[in-house]
Image (tube, chains in turn orange, cyan):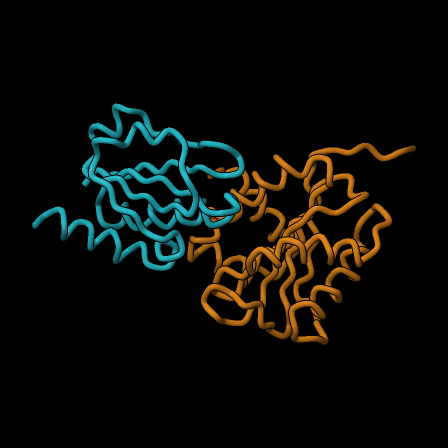
Length: 159
Length: 103
């Protein structure tokens, strides 16, 4: 059975993620290893890292209050992925407010469909990330089921 | 005040929409009407009509790139501000605009 590329978002959660490193690239590598294991497709962690690094080079995705939204295109990925990673150890992400980051909202998209899908997801997510209450919930929800439900509700609310 | 805004950041994804939300929240909290058009990677969303522009007290341009359909804005009072500033300080920016318009 050959997998079909589709638009359905796969959500992966690590609440919390016990990162051993505290430097941006090293943490990305750690997280990519973990994420690579979660994915259905066989994708080398290095492809995930390079996809993300390409966007970080344009400007840090850390936008304040401990959050970052790393994102990128990943070859061989068949559908968009959202990974919510709550880091045990905060990391310097060169964020807009100069504070360390402990919550990563990572979005990965297939190369072919990169244009519309991840842009719409990111846009909606970013829109809600201004809200104090939303940020608070993203930082405090412990149960994966509750987190999934909360994320779905954000996308449903639109922008 | 009846406030309109256009947000457009360089990559057109995150900051564009964060500025939209920040402006909406700040304006509503201070009792103003607001409509924010975004010009980003997904195209133009929530487009401002000429009628809306003509009825506005002020147009906020939080843009890092050239914007499309500028002709609409020839005759409206405008203020430009960096998108990063809007995201961080929307509350005080709206307040300052009101002060200026009332003097």
